[in-house]
Image (cartoon, rainbow, N blue to C red; front, side, top):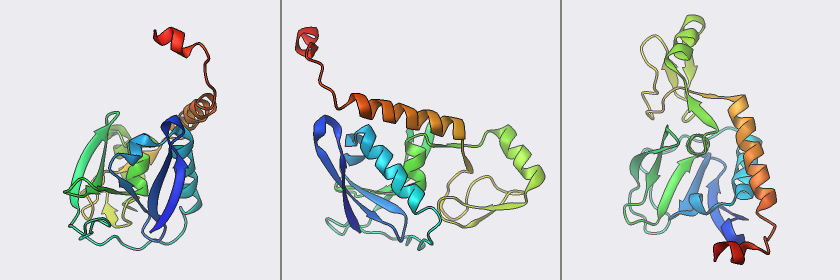
Length: 184
């Protein structure tokens, strides 16, 4: 694992760990939520830079880097998009693949039923974007190996999200002198 210090909310740095070989992030406790927009953009850049790099298959049994307990597979939802990660049963943090981080941040979304039908007309099988296992489209719409549903990168959605993060990052570095009066 490699440590990376990123921008957090209120100017607090957030140090996360990542494994470029496995394409995963380790977030201690709520670090994913503590990232400022600039920190999230930086992780998007890391993912993009390593997108074509070979990755090691993630072991089915993973351990917490803090207490060495076996991590528990967990399913979650954010903005109507389901994603998964492996969490420490003692609350030390979670291991998230690059793919599921992109899903959590609404950068990637599941295919609609109509999009899935169109894909099946033209393609027989695809590789899972999360783990790389083959998915036979004639019989499945989720990966039998890791359970990830077929998803797509919506370029318009991704562009809008990046623009929102850039705008929020730019405005996050200014201080409104009237804020105390407005809060009062």
